[in-house]
Length: 79
Image (cartoon, rainbow, N blue to C red; front, side, top):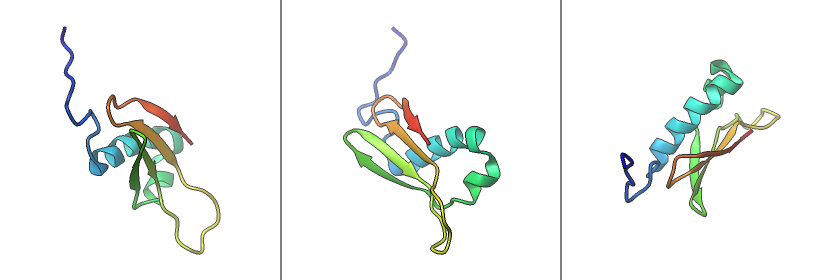
């Protein structure tokens, strides 16, 4: 078998989770839209990283979000 199973998972930390999320979100929403939502933050909940962008206080609307498995790196959801 050629697979590896990292002890900390394929997405072990916040920095990696944000990088993966941005790589997945940019083709869907466009570079400009994702770049405007920086900085991104990642929260680990039940083994999944929830990564979301930011908006200025005066802005209306929502932000791009990705849910990523810490263990496998699977993209569970984006919106």
